[in-house]
Image (cartoon, rainbow, N blue to C red; front, top):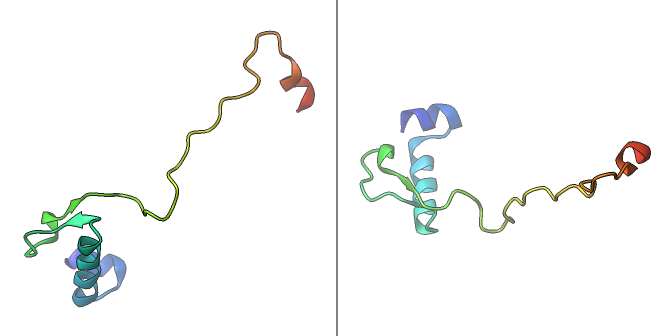
Length: 72
């Protein structure tokens, strides 16, 4: 708890309230509230945002296609 307090600049009450909010929203489980080492992350991203998508494959993958060199 001390490290979170130092790194965030928040008091213990604010940190506990935020962690309880995450537990209520099912982002984490925190059964033994005596220490933050007992926290288990269930979901590591925000639900409102879209998942990152891999970049699209290049359109210049045909053999003999020189348009990459001539268009850029």
